[in-house]
Image (tube, rainbow over all chains, first blue to last red):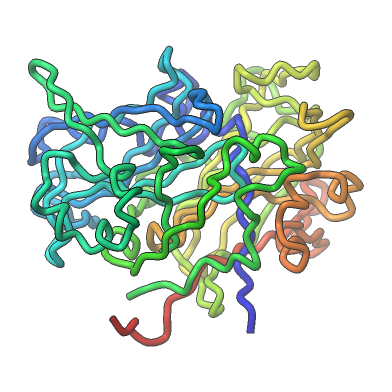
Length: 192
Length: 231
């Protein structure tokens, strides 16, 4: 029997005033945004930044990224999370002059099943009829990355597309992660 | 707990040439299959405390000096999984053009008027039976540059979370009998056998006398697997 799943449709170019209103300056409350931590949040503060690039290498100005992650102890937040960390961030690429996205969060811990620290990512944009899943791993976790079951299942030549590069910026820990929709550096997207 | 796979006989392909912007934005390589783990089988949850009291009523949540123009409608339905189980307490976010076919988003410069009393943004959470209800005005059709004389059918954008990251869905609700549906590459991008699920159903029972026409739009998300996946 075939499923009755409702088909996906593109998010389109005008999602911002509902999904990311505060980032774009609209008069509506954001339920989630790029600022995922406050003074109470436990863990190492990090910033993730990058661009979404189309098949011509041009940065996309109307994409939206969501991330879902474990906390610093490697547990996915639920409603009882003590320090209020939601683990969910949402950001559009339309307000930065270079169409970058950014998220201020904490480095997730390894989860109990031995996966390397990672962020779970969803990508949406005009021109994508169905949303896409990917992951962000960290370049400074080489030994854990080497035994991560998901990275191991990805073709060796494409594994690097899932690893964010740590950049040395005084006073901050920044990881750069570009999402390439096509081309030689095409990011791995998952079917899970 | 794991979820049934995304049914690619129901969902559009990632490159669909008639919808021109997919040609440079859809990935060209096959998706890499992975087993579901914590990141896929859990997800954020929002509750009534996250909502404003008028978030579900787009005819009232942005009034400045009067009511928005247009045909008032009530949109209701059930969110359930493909096994028929209702999905209670899940977040739905919606957005749409006004009755003239204009979005408040600054990028929309279509020559139709803005309505000072309409923003077109809404949210609600399904009740314990998985049901939701929004009040709004019927959005107008609007032109876009995909091809010569291209017009989007009347539609409302829906974003749903469901119980996990795996159940996340962004889709569009259409209206029955719209002549633009057969000409719209975004709607036509959905596989033929599944496309009808995107079209709401007019209901005189849901219609509120002297107030609002009623449309029903049920949404079906991925269901749970019956038995644990064997590794």
